[in-house]
Image (cartoon, rainbow, N blue to C red; front, side, top):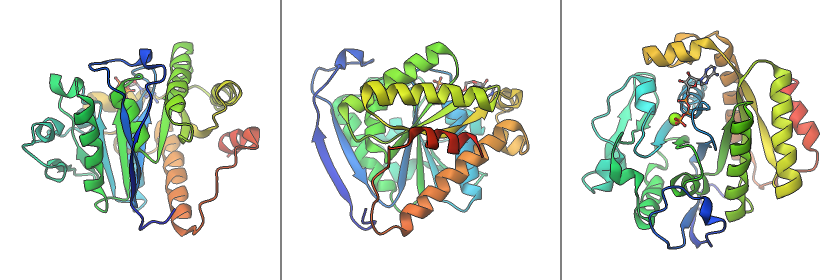
Amino acid sequence: MDQAERLRELVKIKKQESGNFENENDSDEISFINKKTSTKVIAVASGKGGVGKSNFTVNVALELNKMGNRVMILDADLGLANVDILLGINPQYNLSHVLKEEKDMKDIITETEYGIKVIASGSGVKELVNLSNQQRNRFIEKISELEDIVDILLIDTGAGISKNTLSFMYAADYSIVITTPEPTALMDAYGLIKVSSLNKKDIQLKLIVNMVNSKEEAREISSRVILLSRRFLNIFVEPYGYIFRDKNVLNSVMTQKPFSIQYPDTKATQCIKQIAEKISAKILKENVQTVNVPQNAGNIFRKIFEVFNR
Ligand SMILES: Nc1ncnc2c1ncn2[C@@H]1O[C@H](COP(=O)(O)OP(=O)(O)OP(=O)(O)O)[C@@H](O)[C@H]1O
Ligand SMILES: [Mg+2]
């Protein structure tokens, strides 16, 4: 991909399996923006709620920042914002001000004491939950205003297969799907992979298993989702790692100080560091590559083992 090239195309897509959409408030086809800019945009999503998306996003952002990347989090859990709570910040402005056209995206950026920037969503703002297609697309287009301000933009999305979440996933360069080993979370992760890939065949999906008790459990769970997706959906989901169940995660949520700061050596932080290294290394590699090499979906087992045997 030519870094200088700003390829932005508005693609009209058919609402395949649209019966699965939550918060459906109008019956038009949804559209999405396929965005390729020099800023790496990564969406964090899950089928089931409460699997650890926001904690992952905040802590991986902090680790990526420590590695020298300029990082911003966009809280796209519209109407149910959590990122500001986890960081212990109280942003003056949020996305509802952009929606009301009182502010531009750039005006609502909150600088944090940790060096990362945050665009907060409004909590309990009904208008953010019930965005029209046009409003949603305008929001996503505005992501390009953030280009060049940061190297990595992490988008923390709301759980489930909503139009909001799917649109942010389509706007991103790739999406990280988070699950836990619980069968319900696994089923919902598979559901999200299925619906998101039906609408966009070339969607780039990575998988992280959170709250695992062992590396073996992580490998087993990861393999199951990846092989099912390959077999029944013909989608290669790349294994991206795992995060141990760790009581310090909850401790840090209670004190509103991210666990990677408060507990730099705890098990969950070690896992987050490994994932951040992977994200950072890939970006570095892609930036020096002159030719975009298509992802080799050939040897799934090798890829799964590469992640879990380090
Ligand atoms: N690795 C972990 N170990 C132990 N507990 C965890 C871990 N990750 C998350 N949790 C617990 O799960 C809770 C929910 O996490 P979080 O808010 O990040 O999930 P979420 O997916 O963003 O939820 P939502 O779908 O509501 O946005 C945390 O408050 C914490 O108690
Ligand atoms: Mg969340």
